[in-house]
Image (tube, rainbow, N blue to C red):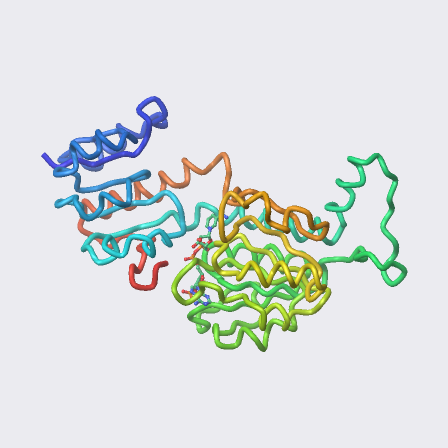
Length: 326
Ligand SMILES: NC(=O)c1ccc[n+]([C@@H]2O[C@H](COP(=O)([O-])OP(=O)(O)OC[C@H]3O[C@@H](n4cnc5c(N)ncnc54)[C@H](OP(=O)(O)O)[C@@H]3O)[C@@H](O)[C@H]2O)c1
């Protein structure tokens, strides 16, 4: 009997999950484990793998037809080209993070606008350090998000939600996506990737919500950072590899841009020697923008929907194009 692997510690399977899988796919035997040796022992029979599945085992699972991963980014395919070439369907959990990451992006933007990053540091020193009014200070001035321009690089599940929230705050939202003909509510103008350099000078916030792919790797380097306004902020919640970090460090040190809010980095955890740790105009969060207490519930929702489709022989949702890596 072929197996469906649920990559959970057995004690951590959310209530009702096994019953739901049994109902949807009674012809498959359920295996619940995160343990590599148990997975290896069952490898010959695994047809579907959901949640955690070791990437290096994909090539040696002869009956594997479908992998439902629990994250959005499929950039691991770049490190496992042999898995990329193998014939199986890969689906992701894109959509699960739209709300928490939009709120994370808003938190970064509001922190810079209201200078919370300075206030928290002053509080730790017990200093009553009021920001100066705009135009009176050599420090960054307090400002409003309303009427500022946000450039979203990547307008997928996350970017679309961010566009709506930012436009509700009165921001002007511009977008860059691979298929610019796909319009989205809240985005005033949509551009293709080749227009990046010409759009960057318009933005007060540049937000990276793109996946890491061969096309996006290092897409923000010296020319792009120099094209940004000196008062503009760069936020990255996608993947660290889309920014050439050595140039970001220079841009922040030399005032090419005003600051950065970073959740992802070229190397994670961010090494202790990185100059980014010491910069007053940088907010660092350790790759948790996508966290939410509703994560499991939402990811399971995508999985159950796809399992029903799979059993019915219908096309799955959230399919990753393994050639494009997203
Ligand atoms: N920090 C975290 O905790 C966290 C959590 C979840 C996700 N992420 C990252 O966020 C990424 C985006 O997630 P999502 O769910 O929004 O993905 P998504 O729905 O697949 O959206 C990706 C967007 O990027 C665009 N894009 C792809 N290649 C591009 C290129 N070369 N130039 C410009 N735009 C390009 C796509 O354009 P089209 O729409 O035209 O195809 C799409 O709009 C994920 O891949 C993952 O790396 C991070």
